[in-house]
Length: 359
Image 1 (tube, rainbow, N blue to C red):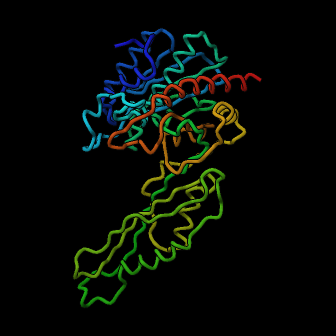
Image 2 (spheres, rainbow, N blue to C red):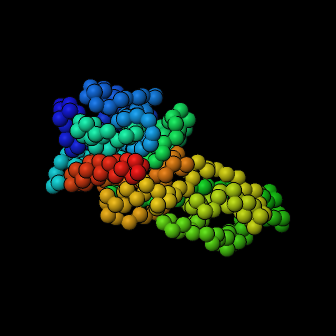
Image 3 (cartoon, helix red, strand yellow):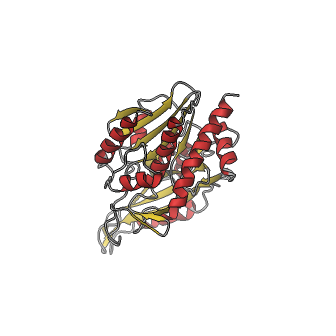
């Protein structure tokens, strides 16, 4: 096995794939990565539980790179061992190759190469490799780090975007709606039917819209996704519950949405989940200008969420190698060309960002 002093980005990715780092099971990978980076002597290393932060330089401005070490469980249809990387036809196959060990590998390789060249950012550039991004639970590493680290001045989040810069992503608000009816035998009860009551509310919900739009991610999207009501085929239903998936934008606060639902639907509305806030970065911010200048690609918006939600107060761009359509697939893979290009792209973004900040 090569050390990080002479390993290629493809070699580094292969080493990371070999660790079956499912959410909450990242320790083996983290132990190896911490020891390997420390052995280079090129970057300062911090560890907080199973979250790692590697630093080049010190002080301000501070540019934070972030990606995650965990992966989703492999598919039963995966050909061969999903944790034994295979390179074939210019691609590397293995669980996590795209989401998001490709980003981890290229971000880390970019920092190591910059440090080895003697680059001084005139501030600090860091890489946070965090846990439990995929599980969306209480163990999320970036959420934990935000409670103990200072606020960065800007950030890059590594997720597969084909190295196109994402300047906004929708948030996720899940509401629980409940109607009440009269319980009893279906042959006798004539009082309110909870299912009919919910049906009336669903018709009203179709008319709820918000005119505000974000230039990258459009408007708020409302989708009822599950419904449950009644207890037996011959019993009058006394309750009906639905869950509503609402993809939010920064221009429409969650509080405004909740108040609108309660007012217009006139029923019990509770918040099931509001952790995933919507995010957006000013296109004129130096980090946004740096990525567009380097990549030559326009900013775009994403309907899906990432750990960017825990950097919502930080000007952030989501950018990484690989195609998101390959994420979580049975035979996940990433193009070698994307990995190698990502290393150079991250280096150029870092250099350009700090050049702008020194003006």
